[in-house]
Length: 286
Image (cartoon, rainbow, N blue to C red):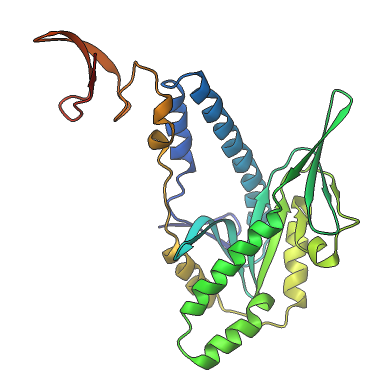
């Protein structure tokens, strides 16, 4: 675990083996080995990752310069039984804990009275409308899983009861629109939906306001760190297997088992192609 303080001493990041950089390197390496169909898929994946990184960097900047005492976990993956969630930010403050879903969306966002999200992009004089899966619903799944994990750690009836009564008062779900150019139209959305959507330039004020309103007991720095350690230990940190995902798109120049270059060889019965990683890999083809 790498722990470092930002320029603001009150903000502490727990970065546990963030593998985004490694994933991008593997995708770019794979890009040179696959056919045209594979290239399209990988290029789209790289584009989405870079878009996500930009959005997360915007939130990073706001939190680092907030001057609010907090512990932050980024990109943690939690699991219980068959349920699994990947949380963009878990922000632990002295009073409240924020589960943040980062969305770097291009275009204008409409939210209706049922909480549905529609993205509008203006192209060549036309409006292209596209419904998107509600990030609020997505974050609610994260919240339910966190609640189950924490509930399991409560050892007696009283502590479990108190936890259930106070969970939604202490854990706050918010969707942060990380693109400054995004225009949000939520005039038809219900109040409880509006309260869960925050534009990036309003994030710090939102946290300060919620903490001020909260009647929760103020936690010490040690208690905040204890919570951060608890969740960092629960992080399963599952790395995506890029080769396994895109191996079916490899060209004949590359080994289907390990991705290394294939080389032409002379055998007892004529020429054949073998993996350059021989003898560690014994893949061959005619």
